[in-house]
Image 1 (cartoon, rainbow, N blue to C red):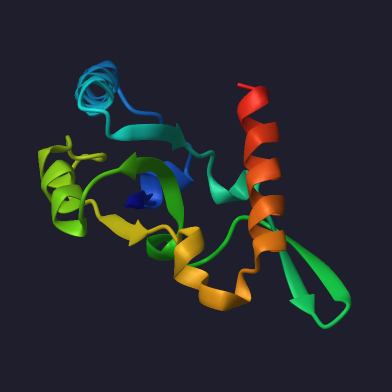
Image 2 (image 1 turned 135 degrees about the horizontal axis):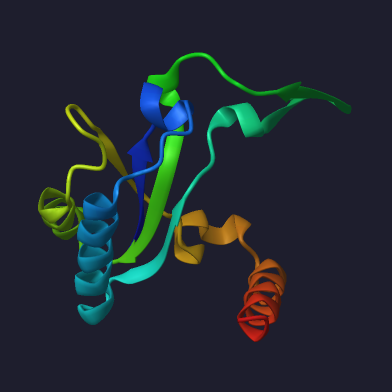
Length: 141
């Protein structure tokens, strides 16, 4: 099972405040533990929403909205992608994680859909296309 583990933003991350050396070292050590355990697939931090944009869809129309975005608590500051046996295992790993920010922080855990989750609607042709795309992405690594 794959899970996206999402570090929720706060006022400091949205202001572009970068982590100090101790937190960078602690997170580096945590990521190393994840990698050694075969759990870590990806890990990235994100720039503040002031450097981002959203594209709103309404039928065939597209509207671009530049950041920053309100509701900091709903924004993402960074993420991991993990391969684990269960949501419970993901929770146990998160509990071992260094606190991403001084004071209060929140990390959300969301399971990633797998091909079999889509049932018959995900036809053999669509599955083959998905496999081709994944192979192309893997070639670029």
